[in-house]
Image (tube, rainbow, N blue to C red):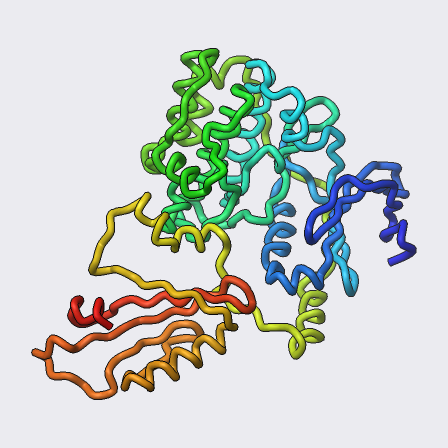
Length: 413
């Protein structure tokens, strides 16, 4: 791979940014003198955090997208310990940095950036790509002040119309339907985030803010926000339709593009055919080698791992904000400071102690019922379902619900 200051044909020249799992460095392509940004990802940390597929998804998604308002990927290089994603260098930095010192933009500049954002997201949606983490930190500015969408690590690739299930994104920008822990339309969710961004560009603040997450999510679910007095009628009308809490009623991108306020000074930016060949090392093979070496020393990652949004949505306190309580579907949730395997063994042992039988339905779900079968007319007949959900390697949530039988007995159980 070369010395520490060189990656293949790229000479490293400085640091752009640093996160938990990756660093982004400025480099020069020694064959043509072109500046590039190289995202350097630590494979070991990615594997330990169960983020392998997120990294692979980001790489594969970015190779599909060729648009002037989307950060371009040039090459992916793999080593034993690192993945290097060589990308277009965008010198203006994050839009969030600009907003930190100018606060709000004038209408002309805000509209131009919003138009470019909508063009880029429309292009993504036409190709079945839904970003799901749109926010100023993931929007970059080039040397001419043009917008570039970046960071597709949480994106989803689906056929248009397919519903998504994974709740993800950043709290202040996430659509209310994601908080309800239900299936949702990725295109409508992206439109909501774009509406929050437009409000922020024009107002100098977010529409939904609160240090208490429960209060914040209640505001989002009810679309509780107020316009600053300087907002024009056209701005208010468009944002109001984008921040409709009912996803099916929310304005769609074709309608946004036809909006009179949006159309002012609008110069469409379109995708293009990329002649540049993108070189991709086999990151699957590299990841597999890490997995094999660490299989016996690391705690196994389960497919039941949940993110913060799903955990919050499971909270009794929060669930009541979004839907009616239904006793017939009531669930009891318990915490466990053990691994998934240890927790399941404890459930099985506890069930045996009270003459209950446990039948596994998969690695994380089980059915629990009395050892002796009751008669059909018996009110004491009931079956329980239990699911063990990993929150962290040694912390789980056990979700117990009635799957059959009489409700009163379930409440007493």
